[in-house]
Image 1: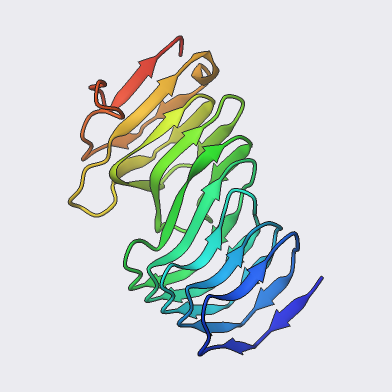
Image 2 (image 1 turned 135 degrees about the horizontal axis):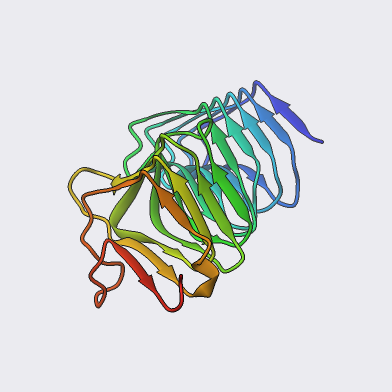
Length: 219
């Protein structure tokens, strides 16, 4: 695979590194002042020890068509530190350092169709906007994690959500999140144990009232 190590990309526009249908190793790279620092359209790169600052959109952007491992990077002063969308992919974020990212450090969304686990090694700065677990998909959250959800955001579960010792709360301490919806028979295997759900509006959509909503044959 292609290896890029200990390089600097600066005083340029648009995107520092664009990855498509490839799985390079990117290490110890300094990127500053772009629109996107690293844009992974598809593929599964390893990005480690990089420093990304001052990007107008995202320091690192991972759409639902891409995956990869992102570890021990420093993301400072970007609009968003890392932005990722889920589908069948399961990117890993661990040991990254974040500061001064205007609209979030690690912001995730999407429609999980595969098997995703958020364990103790995953970055704790994660916040959700709107996330769906599709029928046949699964999201497992291991004990001790806090899941921060943005204004009126929520979690819709048509597949399986398993969480133990998890706190679901607002992302910014001001704007309340919506709630969690278990919908349809595909959600019947879901389980919440010893969880805390706090600072929510109390619905996912306008006509629902619960912080937890269980509907449509979810048993």
